[in-house]
Image 1 (tube, rainbow, N blue to C red):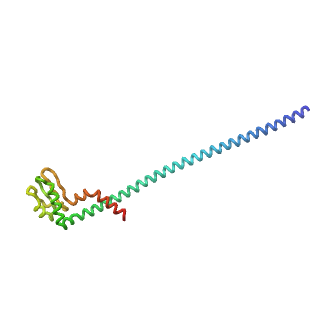
Image 2: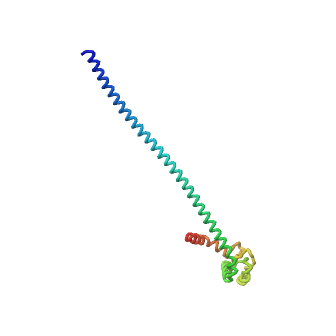
Length: 188
């Protein structure tokens, strides 16, 4: 047995060792390939998640900005509508005073009720001058002032100003009236 047998055994052992190394190499290659595929999948999933989060954040920001612009436009439209209503009502007030003498007398009486013993001047529209002169105490002079078309204004010597006009009443009542106007608009 000599040399030929020894060479055959060595050759056989070498082939077995080569097969074992090749099998181990194939296993290592498969494991490396699987690890690489898993790492690549994780990186791709992370990139997709980051991109999705970025796109979602960007779209959320755009939606929030659009919502703010829309709300601002609605508020501006409501404010413009309320301003038009207020000016339309204000435009009707002089005709109310002119058309209703009792209303004019009531406004004059309201202004004079706050005077007390003070001295001053009552200014009113020409249509109310006669009623104002009849109601005013001697310490209060009456002046016709076309600029005061919706009632009476008393200016006392002490510096106190008493505004008994429908314009002033509208200004005081406007917050509640504007809410009512908006409520009526919502029901339309």
